[in-house]
Length: 324
Image (cartoon, rainbow, N blue to C red; front, side, top):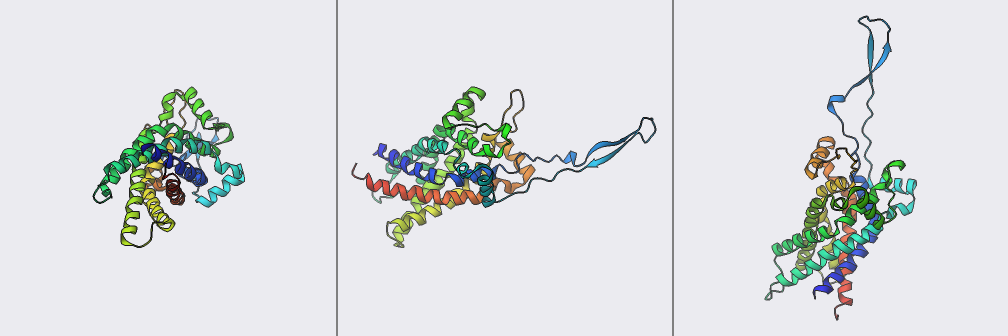
C-alpha cells in the first residue's frame, strides 16, 4: 500500500507541475520585481561638481543635485508573460521545466506518498475518517521531509526561471537541471544545493498541510452533506478551495524563498541577504509589507489549476491502480 501511494502521487504531481510551469515562471519573475531597487534615505539627493574654478575663493565649487531615477514600475502577470514571449520566445515560458519535473519527482512524490501512509495509519477505524488536526500534522510532516529531499531541484528551478530577467552577461545559462546542479556544486559548493532549505521546508510544510488537509476535509464535507457525488465535480471544487487556502498561507514565505535561492554570492563579497529574516526585513523595509504577497495572482492562478490537475489526476490514477 505504501509504495503505491508514492507512485500515484508522483505521477499526478509530475503531470500537474509540467502543465502549470509557465504560471510558476511568471510567479517567480513577479516575486523578484523591485529586488534590486533598495532606496537609501541618506542619499535622496546626490551631488556632483558643476563648475570648478582655479581660484580658492568662497565660490570654489558649486554643486547641483543629480536626479535620482524612480523605482522600476510594477507590472502584472499578463504583462510579464507578454514580455517573456516578446524578448525570449514562447519556449521561454517552459524554461526550467526539467527542474520542475525533477522537483516533483523528488519533493511531491515523497510528500504525497508519506501523507498517504500517515493518512491510512491515523484514520479512525470505526468512522473511516481522520480528524482535521491529524490531517494537518500529517501534511506538516510529509511536506517537511519532501522539501528536504527536493531542495536541490527547487534551487535549480528558481534560478533557471529567473535567468531571463538578468542582463545577458550576468545570466547563468544552465542547459538543464543536471547542468545547473553540476555548476552550482563546482562554483558554490555542495552546500549551495540546500540554500534556502529552511524556507523550502517551512513553505512545504505549510503548503502540504493546507493543501492536502483542506482537500480531504472539504471533499469529506461535500460528500457527507450530499452536495455532490464522488466525481469530477467534487474533486474540482475541493481542489480549487484547497489551492486558495495553500496560496494565502504560503505566499509570503515563497517570496522570501525565491529571493534567497536566486541571490548571487560573489567570492569574498557579503551576500545580499544573510538569511531568511534579513531578506524579509530588507524586502518589507524597501518595498512595503505587501511585497510579501508579490506574485499572489499568478500564485493562485497557478495553485488553483495545479491543485485541480493534481487531485483529479490522482483520483484517476488511483482508479487505474486500484487492483494492484
